[in-house]
Length: 322
Ligand SMILES: O=P(O)(O)OC[C@H]1O[C@](O)(COP(=O)(O)O)[C@@H](O)[C@@H]1O
Ligand SMILES: [Mg+2]
Ligand SMILES: [Mg+2]
Image 1 (cartoon, protein in one colour):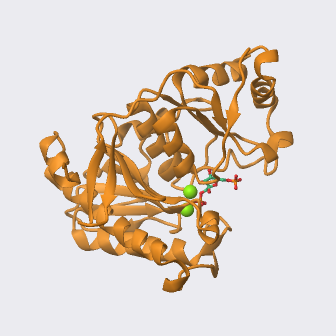
Image 2 (cartoon, helix red, strand yellow):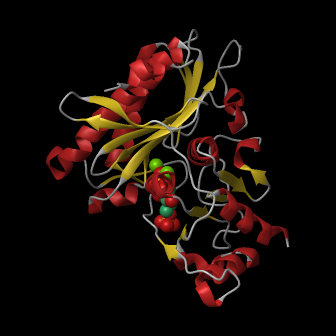
Image 3 (tube, rainbow, N blue to C red):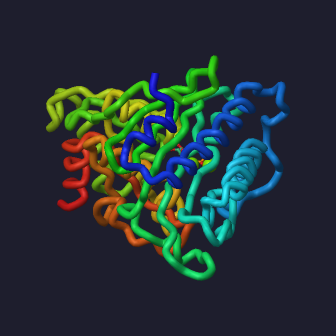
């Protein structure tokens, strides 16, 4: 049985990064415990506040954010934090070598129906500056030192990349430790499964209308095969399915709010998932090219996302080039 920290110590991961990932794992075990207690822990429902993006915060969004913040800031390994639930960056220790961006609770509308949610994180090396600023975070995802998520499902799983492929760990509740359960994740290049919120169909741009239209036409259409569709409404769970059994996931631009480039956030949703998908042999694109090459302009920036099976992502992207 290979535990998370011993597995990381055996790889080329710097010791400070091992401690940081370990700490994120500890915070997520705490979040998992509160989720499992459900209504008994009094954490369900809305906190009655809005976050910086005008969305209602769930109590658990706030609790998960505070837990991660407290654990990480106490550690001394973190120079600064950025979170979906924090308007600006939060300064950490001057001696900390890393910056962490996170979505403390992804898919939070699933909490009240006891469905899957997760925590997504992205880690960069902190540049050598005197005082940490938002500018330090605005690095392309290609620079990530590590990225991953914890999925709170029937089992609690930590999925991680430090740039040497993607590993999956499962929380062994008997010993309270994440143990290695998948050593090398690989996404098949072709697929017959896609994930998109179909209720937004009439709002999509024309290339996405055409692409999805051709998938829906199945064996009678130009793709000459039938496609299945899934949508969990938690990116973390939809991407987990893709890492386990393949597929394509997209949250495209749509014209409901034309000024917003998409729904998903670059720094703590698209970038970390982009790294995992590329490290597993898939592709992760936005409308201008690979997600990991996007130069961020602000920490809460949104991007259209198309990721998963390499050949299918390339096909979808080609519709946009026509
Ligand atoms: O409800 P929709 O429009 O289908 O959106 C679902 C998407 O929204 C998200 O829940 C956004 O994440 P948060 O819950 O962290 O805001 C994604 O995880 C998911 O893919
Ligand atoms: Mg999210
Ligand atoms: Mg969230």
